[in-house]
Length: 388
Image 1 (cartoon, one colour):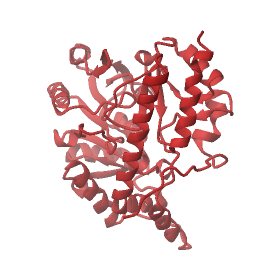
Image 2 (image 1 turned 180 degrees about the vertical axis):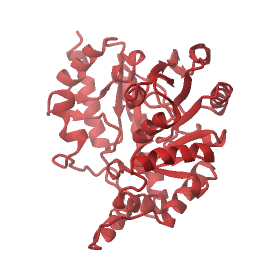
Image 3 (image 1 turned 30 degrees about the vertical axis):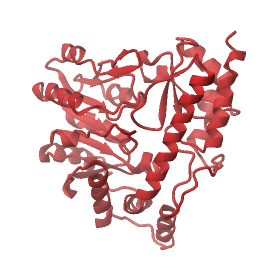
Image 4 (image 1 turned 90 degrees about the vertical axis):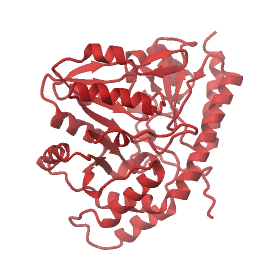
């Protein structure tokens, strides 16, 4: 068995890399350690590189379609990892999960309809609603101690005849909840009772910490649009490929009508090649990677407990993104940004980006070599110099 080396550092600067080359745009400086946008500072496996190189050697990059292995490998992966039985015809294309959310809003709601999201949540959820003249309806998650839960009473109080859609994050970014079957069944029941279309972003579903498990909406209802991508699991965000799984034929035909109307029914040639290789050959690499990233998570948790009492790492069921409770430093997002960016030279996502109830928190990406993470934690350790 191959032992993969995730300690190897990769210099991503000057590669048109958003995370490293656009820090001046997003943070106003270039001399910080970026731990923000959700891709990994870890090299993709050689078998994906080789698959792309082999196709690149063919001298024609013309129009292409998805081959049988593209579908078969994804279907096998979803069954083996999550016990989901997916039919080929259910799988639709999108260049990314965020475009799929926007296309779903355009397809399954009308202007002025209410579309529900559950902050604190991934910022593009807000734009997917407001950019298309829908009413942004915020069903804030409830925080009790260190536990986030869905507020079903608040949800039902906000639903009316104009509510047409709810966008779920499952597992949830940034708080790291892997929603339980009981929670999701309650949510499905509310949506079905009120004829609300349920769209589920499941892009982080391969990264679930035991004893938790991923409960896909696909296992609970056919009336859903579930969004997946190899971009998180295999670090392929730049390949612009995702799989949108829609079991219900009526919903699927409506989505495809929008997709075809925008003339984006087929994706990137090299994205399909990389995806096919990832799902076909990537199981052992993924297992070792997730073990490594979970060790990174544990390292941050233990380091903060021992050295940085002002910061509490919120319990995480899923993903390589940690939700840091920094209210012991300041509940003001601008003040936290100043501390992290100007004083500590760390580039994290400010919790206020995820909604008003994210203020006082910061999101940290730990998908990097341990050496990088250790440097980040040593910078965090210097907090005492700036909060006297």
